Length: 320
Ligand code: COA
Image 1 (cartoon, rainbow, N blue to C red):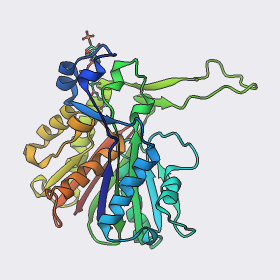
Image 2 (image 1 turned 60 degrees about the vertical axis):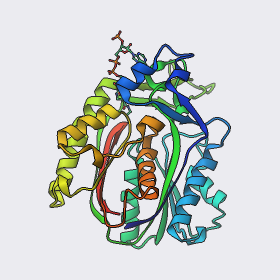
Image 3 (image 1 turned 180 degrees about the vertical axis):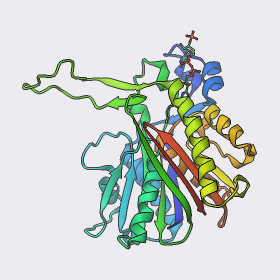
Image 4 (image 1 turned 135 degrees about the vertical axis):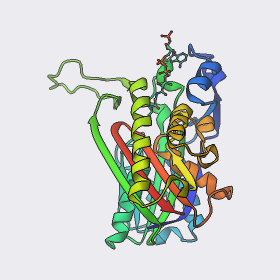
């Protein structure tokens, strides 16, 4: 596979740490020192599906294709208003792609959804099941936070980013992992008990819960290990990688990974300071920014590394 177009879209509302400390017991000093996050974009008046469609439209424009050339749509998202229909079907409708020969499916592999989706794109292209795939990562993480709880609220932001992928030989290495640890990051949809419900204590409201320290440790250990293994397996050295695009959850996590790898800061673009943790949208947001600003150029070697709830990880090396 190869990526032939990128696009992104962010909600208008920018919220600073000081704005959060007006109603939460937190401070700009604490959030900046512990996470590196200064601001995040939060959905207010926009509709989430419109944001996702905007990112998708920009990626299709950049690819030089038109919407009807797309014959598969995959959308990565952790949580959105629509349980059904799935977001990729809504994006298809918004883009005016009539079908029926454009299957749509959503992927939820938490913050690793973009890398999981891209791996799936490669499988679909390699087996001839699709020719031009639209992969969108769209997240409104701020909707599942409890806005009275400072633990999670300060970490997340909303955003969407997309790529168009077609047949090519960019992919050098891809490895997905999953280790069952269902309680480190958990969010359950609110459910109303039925009249026949016999279970005690069904959750009607359970905001995001996270074992922050554990996630921090696992993220640094697994990403450092996965990245070293990726370059070794691919017969490369860390110096051969031009851009390390890491999932943006916390600047300190990324800094610890970078120090483990002993690579220069300039190879690790970041956006968590401005966008917070946008879950699976964070890597394609970095990619789109890098491409549009001319920092990521055709022929550059990129490494994607992500980790998230599950506990899942994904690592990919590819030429842009
Ligand atoms: N504002 C101000 N103070 C806060 C706070 C907040 N938002 N959250 C916690 N605190 C306080 C705690 O009450 C505690 O106070 P105490 O020392 O008086 O008891 C102190 O800050 C330290 O809390 P702790 O939870 O140990 O902080 P930490 O250094 O582990 O940082 C995280 C917390 C969440 C920032 C950090 O663990 C983290 O980033 N983990 C990874 C989470 C993540 O990336 N998840 C997504 C993965 S995809």
